[in-house]
Image (cartoon, helix red, strand yellow):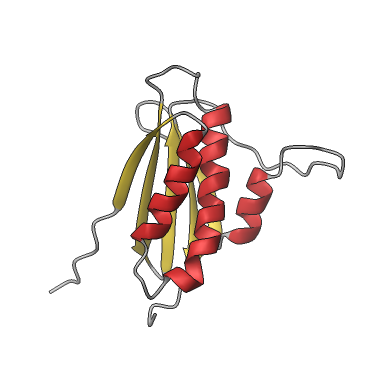
Length: 137
């Protein structure tokens, strides 16, 4: 019989800066206790960067705009997908030392084992990033 996978953790947050802290906390708290010391800090930083980018660049600022997060374990990784209703595709940039922004995806690139951008089936964009973990705990 195949191993039944865990149900992914799933949240919707308003497209508001206050949601970044709430998302970071929700994602870290959903990790199994044994993995928190190994993954929580990096996962919180990934969450902060991706949710902030989704709010700033992927929403219209309307009260009804939501940012969606899904977290699930698969193939020795914890995968985080952050989705927004926007149609733009985030692009990795290399800002100069004097730039005050533009480093979010650079952090994602350096923290994650793998990451990608995918269009949503009907509307929107998802950024998916994975952090590897020791399956033995």
